[in-house]
Image (cartoon, rainbow, N blue to C red):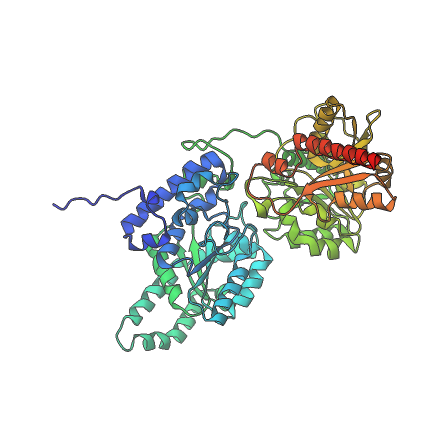
Length: 637
């Protein structure tokens, strides 16, 4: 009797390059998939991160590395929140415990981190365009290898994906688009493409028969290829009879293969090998299950899409404290109960932006437009044009995509749209592509825009009402991820655009806005204890800035502005120009964020930017010492 083969389960400790799995047999590959899932679940339970999306592409990732050879072949992961298995197979398993930590490995692909990460990503729907350009460059320069874009069906709700498909499909380049179809982005997918993919998933038998029959014909010596080409016309006629309509992707110019079982390694490897042999654009349609292999993630894939720490056995995790997103959602529901003109718009982020309750209470007034922020803004402008009150809830980092629409479709015509800008400021571990530090700077360039930046929950409620009812044109309310910072327990907000906390005898003014008002206030108390009295000017409406704020600041010898946003084009620069306009002759400093913010906790990010209380105290103290030194030097000349 033959001995049962023993399959190892500790491959990841040995794999330093994806080339090493090319010799694996099917049993070994399946064991590797199980190990990858265990590693991801154990790690994400501690570090937090994207779980469901990564569990769903384990077999696909293994098959990709089995068939292709990176970095000679190049993978472009759309969004990039499904790249964990790829990272584990490309020499980063030993550092995987540092995922999303300060100084650790990124939760998204990063060419700075590995040559196997061919393109930096973080936002949706970009992979096909990037891969199209990369493949074209290979063709132009005579370089070898294939470029593979891996894109989810949720990302196909974004318009950029179709711009990429339109151009890539008519090229002659070695480009494969792998469509990872799990029926979801973060929330459930919506629109035509979701229905079209559902219809394609309903007829996989034809595709499997086509692949097997084509391979059989090619295997016939001498005449196999001729026979296959001769039957191509018959195949097309047969397909039109079997299909009610031809594949959308074939109409775009792609050779369509699928749908394949995204958890069947044999299907995946054969499909990828077939696509690799074709010297033209191919779309490989793969059906997967988000959260595959983890019961609680499969049951609630949206909950475990992006998650903090959890119990690896049960999936339970501590309920987070009340956050700005929750308060926004509650207040919008309250306002909508009194005003039927109010409606909400989300770009596939109902839960993340706090709109789940609104959707449950007012489903006919809640619109999920898919991952299409540009459309969301113009759609809102259309709603506003006919007297509705649209509120677009969107993360700051994703609002960047809508600059043209805010400018041309809303601001110029004066349409009253309201943008609830979530995750404003330093967001944290997701890194450069997900920080909310640019919205103020680009909104600052658009005329007729009003922006509020609340410091606490009560102020958010006030500002949301003001944005809806008290102003015209484009209005935005921006607020951070998570909850309030400590130190605002006794702060009582009002409807004023600014508040001055005046300290008797103070010759120094600290100005700021948003959540770091708590840090500035704490710094002011610390400075007072050090014998340096300061006043604090808190802006609540940061665009437009009241001229009276510049008048107030002009009365102080030294003014320090602290801003949780990018320096160039920010409110700190605007405030400085207002002082210049008043011929201010005192000392002015602007502390803001310089460049991109890497993965780190929000607290560490604020410290590095000099926006925590201790850094603020040090900056003001140092500037005062410098001024004293300069004055003493001037007196001795």
